[in-house]
Structures are given as structure tokens and as C-alpha cells.
Length: 303
Image (cartoon, rainbow, N blue to C red; front, side):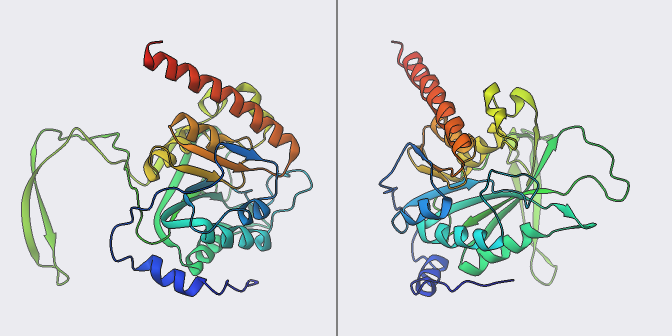
């Protein structure tokens, strides 16, 4: 695997991000907001200042499963994008990286794991690994269990500045006092306490979504893009790891699912998409999303 040199400031930045002395309270100071630009991801990222993005959420091409015009995607390109994401992510910021391995030449490519390790080599912490289960009908594979798992690797630059766990898992014993025990390293029970069980708990690390049609995207024309991220997935990532009025970046914006979801969740957005047909699709989708957002604000204000 080829390696790229790290910028001179990276070593010090990695030490600072790993060991913050106090909670990160830094606010968003990205100079560009609510724009989707027709530009290569690397060039777009290089136009941004250091430490300005609180959350990036993106789904890069899954190996060579899809063709996106004449814009190649390989590991060399990935490394350039990852390096720039490290630079522009603010201390405490998050990168959500949605990826799946292709099955080629009789085996899984393992690209997702190579990418995760590269991110960690740059200095990112692997804060969470989510498995995305899409409820779709597929053919039976005669030699493997199911399809290759789809992941969202959640990387943080130091201690995350914002964590809002989605609590939508019903608790079977809601309202009851349950006893919980912990053990020390020797395996001896050290503490026991009773806790009142809440109605809902944080969801597990396997996130399940129904996909296809309006379950994936509410805009029918969005399916001109061949590989849409479900709007529900983008929304849940944004709600989990950002705050209202944060800037949410998608450097590989595609049909602008992340950008649309950010807007409707009361965040700013910024997207880069190099392929002109998809950029036009993204602009149309965001125009409709702004109209819907304005209508919602008027309804909420009672005007």
C-alpha cells in the first residue's frame, strides 16, 4: 500500500487532538456555508482553512461497483481526501465514513478496513463502528452468508465535541429498578447498584433501515443517482454528532443527501461534487429542500 507523507504540522496536531486538556467548546468558523460546488473533492477541501469543520458525513464510491463519469476513485485518491479531512476537521470534530467492500476475484476487497486504518494512522480516533443493515431483497449467495457488511466508521479528532445518542430502543423493563454489577480486572464484583430503567435506551451499533423508493429518498428524481445514501441514515448521523447551526460537510456529495438532511436538521451544509450531472441534480434537490424548509419555518411561526 502506497504511503503519502504527512504535512509538517500533523505530528503536533495529532498529539494535541489526542490529549485535549479540557472539553472542546470551539464553535464553527467555516467561511463557506450552504453551498454545493462543482469541484473535485481534494480541490474543494484544499480551499478550506484548517480546523473549521465540526462534522463531515460522506459515502465514497464502494470500490468499482459504480462508475461516476470519468472521475476515477482509487486508494491514492482516497488518501488525499483523508489527509485533507484531517486538516479541516476541528478539534473534537467528527468524520462519518460510510463504506462497503466489493466482492472481486472471489474475495472481499477489504478496502473499508484499509481506509479505516489509514484514517487512524493520520491521528483520528475510531470512536464508533456502525453496521448498516438495509432491508432489501437480494439474490441468495451460494458461497457466503448474505452480502458484504456496510459500515459507517465514526472518526473523531480527539475527544468528540458533541455526542447526542439516539434513544429509540424500547426497554423491556421500563420503569423497573434493576440491579447492575461491575467487576474489576481480577473478575471480582466491585460495585452493585440499582438503576431505574428508562422507557427508551440508546440504539445498538447495528442500524437497520428500509430502503427503496421513498424510504431511501423523498425526491423521486433523486434516483437519477445510482447509489443514494438513505436520507434517514444521513439524518441520524447528523443528529448524533453535530449541533444546530453547525456546518456539515460532504466532500463527495453525489445527489446531496447529506446536505439536504443537514438543512432540514437546522444545520448549515457544504458539499463538493465533481460530476456535473450529479451536481445539477444536487442543486435541484437542495433548491426544493430550501423551499420545504422555508414552508416549515412559516408553519412553525404561525404566519
